[in-house]
Amino acid sequence: MPSNIVLIGPMASGKSTVGSALARRLSRPHLDTDHFFVARHGAIPVFFRTRGEAAFRAAEEKIVAELLDSPRPSVVSLGGGAILSAATRQLLADCFVVFLDVTEAQAQLRIGDAVTRPVLSSEPNVTPIERWKQIYAEREPLYRQCVDLVVSSAEDTVDSRVDTIVQSMAAR
Ligand SMILES: Nc1ncnc2c1ncn2[C@@H]1O[C@H](COP(=O)(O)OP(=O)(O)O)[C@@H](O)[C@H]1O
Ligand SMILES: O=C(O)C1=C[C@@H](OP(=O)(O)O)[C@@H](O)[C@H](O)C1
Ligand SMILES: [Mg+2]
Image 1 (cartoon, protein in one colour):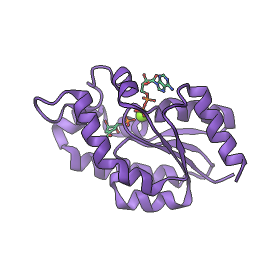
Image 2 (spheres, protein in one colour):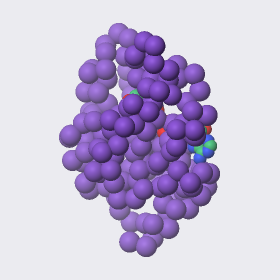
Image 3 (cartoon, protein in one colour):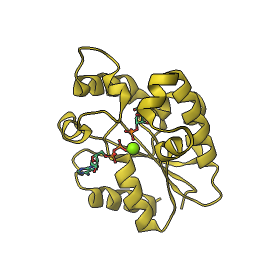
Image 4 (cartoon, protein in one colour):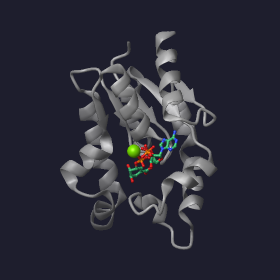
C-alpha cells in the first residue's frame, strides 16, 4: 500500500466526501487540508477578503507539506487549487494520487451558492458555475500531470468511487 493516498480534482468533485469514506474503509486517518487551514487561519472566505489569494496559496502549500509528512499513512483531501503549487506537485510524486472527475452538471448541483468557495465569486458578472468551468479548464493539465488514477465522472456514488480506488490500489 502506498504511504499517502491523495485526492485531487476541481471544486465539488467530492475530494472531502470521498476522502472521508475511503479513510473509513481503509482504517486510515483522513486529513483534509481545508479543515486544517480553517483551524489555523479561520474561515477561507474571510482570509481571501482580508489577505488575498496569494497569501492563501502560501499558507495552503505549507499545510499540504506538513500533512503529507504525517507519520501514519493517510488519506489526504487537497483543496481544488493546491496543485497550482509546483512544490506541492513535486511532493505528490511520492503518493498515490487520485483525480476525481466531475461533470459540469454534477458540479452545478453540488457547489450550492458558492459562498464557501471565494474563487467562484472572484469575477463580477460571472456566475459561479461559469467561473468553475473556467478554473477547471485552466487547471486540468496540472491535475492530469500529477495523477496515478482517474475516477471517471460516470462513477457517480461515493461508494462506487471508494470501490474503484481500493480495487485500483489492490491491483498494483
Ligand atoms: N458522489 C457524490 N454524489 C453526490 N453528491 C456528492 C458526491 N460527492 C460529493 N457530493 C456532495 O457534493 C458536495 C461537494 O463535495 P465535497 O466533498 O465538499 O467536494 P470537494 O471537497 O471536492 O470540493 C457536498 O455537498 C457533497 O455532499
Ligand atoms: O479550487 C480552489 O481554488 C479552492 C478550493 C476549495 O476546496 P475544495 O476543492 O475542497 O472545494 C478551497 O481550498 C478554497 O476555497 C479554494
Ligand atoms: Mg474539499
